[in-house]
Length: 171
Image 1 (tube, rainbow, N blue to C red):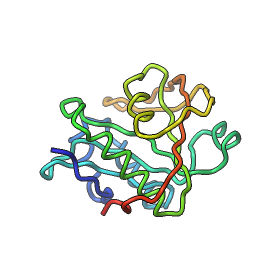
Image 2 (tube, helix red, strand yellow; image 1 turned 90 degrees about the horizontal axis):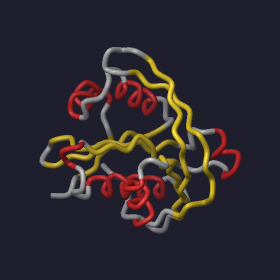
Image 3 (cartoon, one colour; image 1 turned 180 degrees about the vertical axis):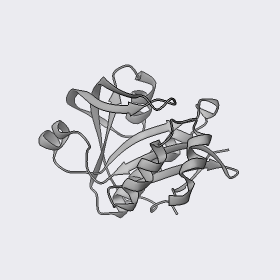
Image 4 (cartoon, helix red, strand yellow; image 1 turned 30 degrees about the horizontal axis):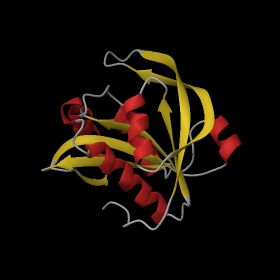
């Protein structure tokens, strides 16, 4: 069964953390950014059970993307629970994010994909994204389940999809 995608609610940070086996604070941070109007948190569910999440940012997080490609909505933090991968939930999240971006007046949407994640790149290309020739090192901080903060850098290539008329944003 394919997931139904909806917008995350402020009070569900703890439930999303448990469902996605995420470090403490990740979803609280994402939902706080949503409350500030910087993004929309998307939640994929099957039968009321959370199977994946993602985020539609108002603009690209990385300066290099904004400098080269300008401002556009960006899909990020896309995650499908390992037990649920390969069932179309990632596609549902991407399509919901694209519909939301289009409903907000966006004409294109971007996504960065790690060079070490060819399966995700194939999915995005199949869904209409195109490689725009921008590759960079994505530097970010993350906190593990023990509360220890780490710095990481991933080699990323950037993909962009032109948006047509969508079916509307998720509820």
